[in-house]
Each structure stands twice: as C-alpha cells, then as structure tokens.
Length: 264
Image: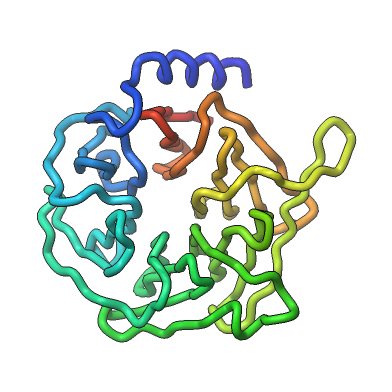
C-alpha cells in the first residue's frame, strides 16, 4: 500500500493541472495499451505513457469499446457518438432519453447508458434503444435517482448515482429489467461505515470478477459478488474518473491530470 501511495504522489506531481494536454476523463484498454479521451484523444502504451495525441472536435467525457467501435459521449450528453481510433467523429445519433447522457458501458454486443434523469438505456445496434425510467418504475420504493455511472460484465449490469441530498446509491440487475439496491457499506477500523463520497464512475474487472465504484475524495469502493465484503481505498486526488484493467494491471485516471498505472 505504501508503494502504491508513493507512486501515486510522484505521478501526481509530474502531471499538469486541469484540462491540460494529458488530462483524461475516460479510457478503454486495447491490445497494446489504452485509448484515453478528454480534451484530446491519446494512445497510451501498456505502461500508461502517452505515445501520441489527436485533436477532438469537442471534449469527451465517456468512452466504451463496443463491437470494435469506440462509443463516446461529449460534454453536452445530448447524443451517442462513435469515433475513430484517431478521434474523428464517425456518427452522432440521438437517443430516446429525456435526460442528459452521463455514462456508457459495453458488455459484448450490448451498449448501456444512463442519464441524470434516472434513465437506464441499452442497445445492440446504436439505433434502437430500450429505455427504462427507473424513477417512475420504482417511485416510492427507491429514492429518485440522478445516475452518473454504469458498468457491465459477469452477467450483471450496475448503475450508480445520487439520490436525495446527494446520497450515493447503486443498483444491480441481471438483465436490465429488475433492479436491486447494492449495499455501499464497508468495514474500516473495526467499524461498519457507509459511503459518503459522491460517485463519479463504475468499472468492471473481468479477471477479478468485481465492480469498482470511483468517487470524489479519491475514494474507490470495491464491490465483489459478496455484498458484505466491500472494501474502500483512497488515492491522493480530488476525484477518480476511471479505472481501466489491462490484464492484471490497472490504469487509474483522476482530476487535475492525475494518472497512475497500478500493478498487483
């Protein structure tokens, strides 16, 4: 743990602040490294070093590798985008969503998305979307949600966001129709605590078969299949934006250009 923290601090000091040239909001793993996006698109090698950058027409905030296609969202969240590996805009398609699209995740042929109006969407072709109005369906049972994160894998899909008074919450489903709340408590110092940080994104790690909830305050909440086995980690950054596994290594992206390749 000490080695991880020291490595993070060293890398944090070496990176630029704000939306600089190496500041990224999302990334996907490819055969030889990563593709990351922010104000620009970048190719990173397997060690997390920037190899080449490409300009973007608009900053991108979400990225998913879906059917060999790069699916993305821009800062408006008004449409679903596809881009080339060099950042060229290939298509811009409207969705039936009423709210702002906030996050994307791919699981095989299925692409998932969520909105700040509590909608959960999925598609197989990018043209026809199935939209679930979570707030309408679970009114009076679950709090009204503004979703900001989604991840899928291992036969499940998980969404997260905030409810009333910015209270964090997460929900999981096997098929996207029936949703169950996922506990966000964890043990620390012999006491059971509840997550207080605000969710930023979700990640699924297939090798470890678990979800990760990335939050403000540098908080990462690990969510294994056992709902009583959650664990919390902290990193020296104001907000964690993305966690991208590549084999057993993991690329972490955070605010102010923070970037860390973590090895087991």
